[in-house]
Length: 263
Image (cartoon, rainbow, N blue to C red; front, side, top):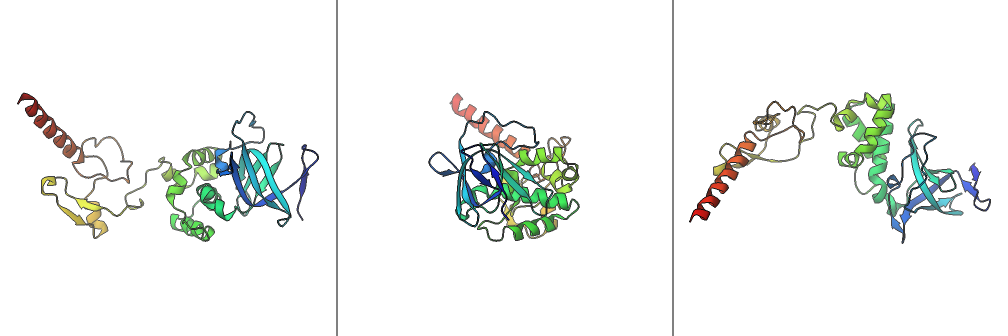
């Protein structure tokens, strides 16, 4: 049974949820609902939001067309599946069901993030492999598979969620993602790279990295110059003496430039 709510706009009845939805601005340009203010608590006010964003979709098995201005959004992780809502200008919440297929690419990273938070809240001690297996299955019909880069698009949202939820704050994966708990070399997803011998840089020696042992020997976990500065942020790796190399090249060019000036 579809629950309806009354709207102040000409006594219109608003459905409980909308499917095949999309959000648009101006001349029907698509925009993610994550651009709207996110309401964390019931008493938060979203007055004064200037951009006019409209929710489009259908309800009542496609019999009712929806085209309503919205001013905020929220999500709820307490159910079997994450629930996402949009706040109409008439101050009525409407649940978002399934996005329009052409709108998936616009909202995909936000949905991946919400589904990630939901799964981790239900399973705070789950392994990283299990998390991504769940997300891959949840978004198997999407053209682009979910990845960690999707989450990195929404670090402020994740950070705030962790601050407000004790269960999320205890998950190792989110702490590692936010940089609060640095991950070890073996835990970090390393890109395919070419090995570069920085000591013999003038020989231009390149080679393929064949094993994990070889990979780890070619890199340091701390910078060779600022070795007391803590763990590195970029994949926790650093080419040995890389800063020395850059500095020597800089001095070499500076010396040549000075010679040219003297001539």
